[in-house]
Length: 405
Ligand code: CTP
Image (cartoon, rainbow, N blue to C red; front, side, top):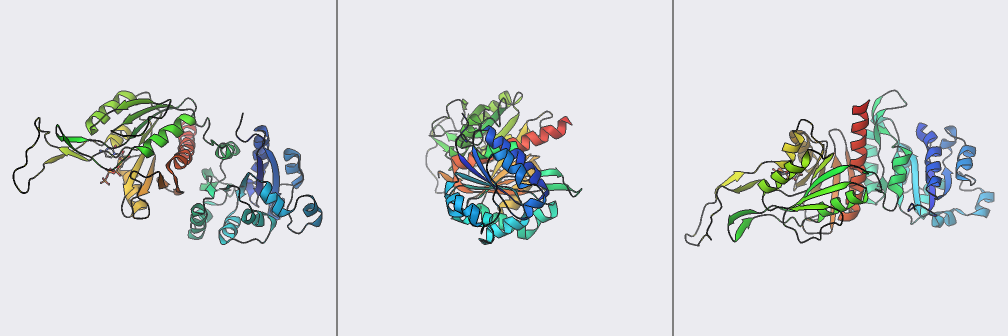
């Protein structure tokens, strides 16, 4: 049974050309046995009639705050309390700005302020409007308030331009709203994930390593399994419990991790490099324990192979996603890595005093492709992993559908 069954979903429709897709969204939600009520802005009525949305939802559609007849049935505060989820699709630039400013100047903005239900928005607008610093700043404000930003997609727009700003497909919105929203989005897809640190031995009792706990990589593996993927987890040393359902390969060094990844990668559709791989290893690991002697000693290190870059460089390589841990210029440094390593996506985490993901159950992630970035917000690693898997699945399918046409 869908996790949306018997859930109260309030669908907000604002005035954009994508409003015609709202009818399909409502239908898909009803198919999931959700109980749906629709609220439109005045401008939305120019694009789709209330009657259409009433017919698909099975309930009268509301658009006015001060409609005494409608308020007598279910007042706006009652409606705000009634909702288990609120989804605004499409969300125009104007609506996003009003939401970010906390305005309550019509029924829909008032409901968004008055509800305690999770709020999602599916932006839809011209690509220049989406790229405008004002819109980016508003989206940033909403992400920080834990509003889920679903999409947008890129492609041919109603205005004739091509770029980012199209509303994501109603089916993708429904997947995002499911309590385990990622259910099925990677059905039948084989995913290889690296996680944890690597250990580079100095001698039989010492090693060079880092603070990675494996929590983020294991959370990504769990979310991919929930999404229906066949998951192979190649893990450096970690105290985390292996996610049930994953095929796990334990390794220690970067070279062992590379060899294991190479043995698994030919049949993989997606590779996600979450591991904090040591960039260098001792030129030679002593076979005997090194004894102390001089006051200072030198350690000669040699570069390790870059596992992620070597997967991305394969001729028939999988869809490739990297992680980047940065202490400064997070967005720029991460995008440079994306381009230098030839990745499809990179996930940046800033390592700062406000967000130190190492060993923590929380993180703050930014998903970056060659042209755009999406702030996934600060959350638990498992919630972020779910959001990430939905986005990865969406980008993976978009790439395949373009390749197929
Ligand atoms: N990575 C890898 N093999 C390496 C080093 C990194 O597969 N030898 C992968 C990581 O799993 C991660 C991404 O590359 O997905 C970026 O790792 P990061 O440590 O942030 O960057 P580096 O490429 O190592 O660059 P630098 O340390 O200079 O920031």
